[in-house]
Image (cartoon, rainbow, N blue to C red; front, side):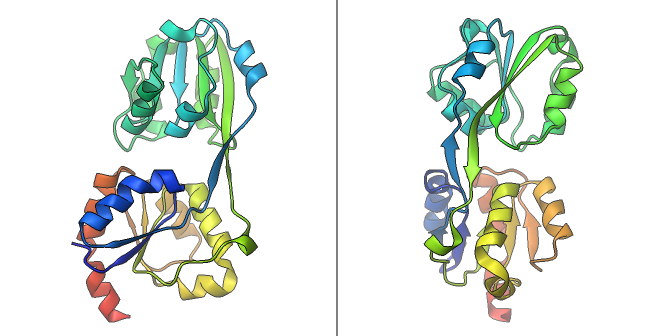
Length: 247
């Protein structure tokens, strides 16, 4: 249980809602503090170029949400989703899903599990956000006939001077590497030292390794996946109430 515990959530307002509801049901107090905004990137020309696509790969739910429409002729293309959340967003748009990477999957997972004979020699459209990892693009480029790189959204950090920081809390949930970088930026040097001992829950091992390499915070853990259920399990197992008493 999280009775009386204050938990800062750093995704967008809309994306924070499911986890905030779960925290409230467990007696906690969710504090929505988006460290990023998601906005569409103009991609009409790229869409027009991505005809004759055999396989669509959506790297995130945001990618599925911000794609204006499927490339011409791609209504029957084989569709790959990076995780159940991405698949749900694709289906919500009325599009088909043929293969879903498991919950908590990474780029490495996708590359290891997606059958090579499925993508070899095909035309693949990669739907993603700006400044994402290059690993997937690099690996696909060496196997496919044509790779359409379709950037449909970007993440923006709020202006530090236009936001009000939350009061010191019992835990912070970080949902992405960009979200973590923005969180550190928004705190600034003075506030960063005040939050140094507050437990920070990461939602991927890649995030955890990055945060460990930047010794900003002393209390770190990682959920097995970014979905609300996995995050709630990790928060509940952390014994945050005992950590609060030690402060």
